[in-house]
Length: 398
Image (tube, rainbow, N blue to C red; front, side, top):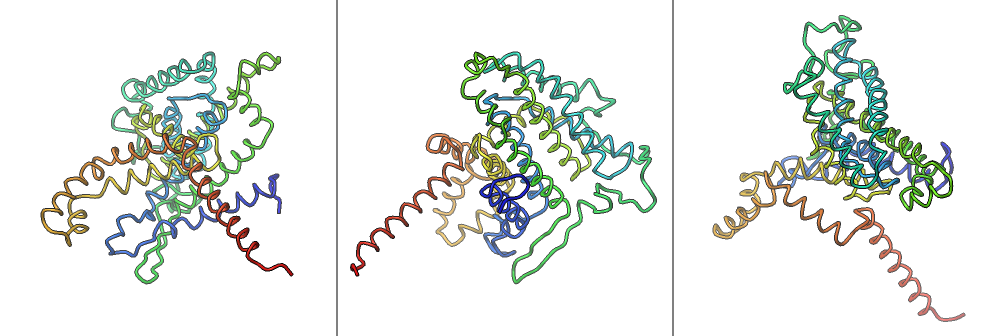
């Protein structure tokens, strides 16, 4: 089956992604509420929205880094620009998210065009340092210089005296999509399980599916093939007479638009924009997501984003009370020892666990989590083929 200009294999792949995305609220709630393992459930709206939003952020970054090999340390600047654009639309027009998202994508594209035009005059580490410098300048401008536009360290938010010229008497007073309020949810109780189907998550999920489809088309297009050629050997490509700079600039702008869209969705879920979204740590986070999942692959950035956000939100909230409940059946001395040891890996120290896992992935799975999945699938196929071959040998000849 082929559709939307994709091959049969890519169509099947896209349909699987769509199905998994839509049933995420069920898949991320494997343990009953009230059980000791319910801590590891991730099916609540805020976290599911982060999975989708940072998945979009990582997909866009992967178009630049995974395909062209250009490592940017400044993509958080576009994330912040997207958030500020949406909140300004809230202040001027109303809480409908559509005008803000459109403005965020356009402003991010123009901002990326400016930064990319300057930064892409250099390559390698020099390009990375230039993007980092632009991002830090953007952060400092938003934090302490452009305060009339950004509200400085307090963050940009909506006040009752803002114009909001399109707000009617019956209009929702929080972000919405033509009346569908983002923070509203429907709950389904099945036995001991409680599943939450949130409007905001499904809005982000549908946008994520659309941009994933776009990235799939880019990967399979002649443009994507040119980006791969740039990554393989840009100097040799230039010797053929082709000018690679327009292609790298286009990839940079597309990647910036993805980041601006992610920032816009963050403000669509929470009507607040702060300069902290433009810090270098946010840029480094998307680099980790892409490498951890598998740079240059389609699903890798999404897996990496989900992996990191899961650890950030689940492992960071494990406290002493939870640890005492888990180890209460052990003798006191062993219980205290295990709780003390666990302090290095959960709660405020969750970064250590993530760092160790990242090291293991980089050392043993250079292709990221996607390579791990491919190895498992290959091992399963080899075992099945060996089993079929052994069964054929044992059957008597007719």
